[in-house]
Image (cartoon, rainbow, N blue to C red):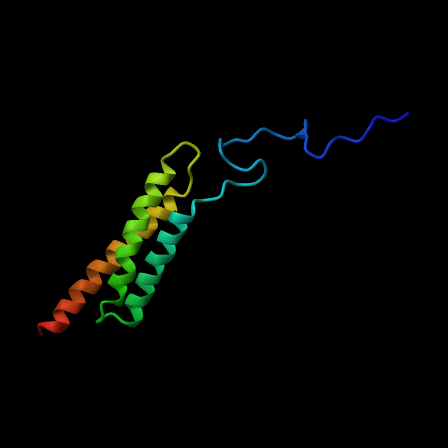
Length: 111
């Protein structure tokens, strides 16, 4: 008689071991949500800088980008953490947009 089929809950004995601890068994590791949020906020702050540069709107998006980028960098430094590049890019874009926005806003107010 043939052997019984393998149980669905048992691990695959032929699967390759995970390269990164704390990640899914198959595929690339997923970046943390905080880092992705920082990148999206930073990108949004630079985008709003291009269309509404003399308003404080880019700073309202840039400051949360810096804050979430900081938390994303902290989370990416933990064992198995990924997404440090997204967090750093969000922080840089947020700082850049906030400084340029504040400079242009102050120049528009006092000129």
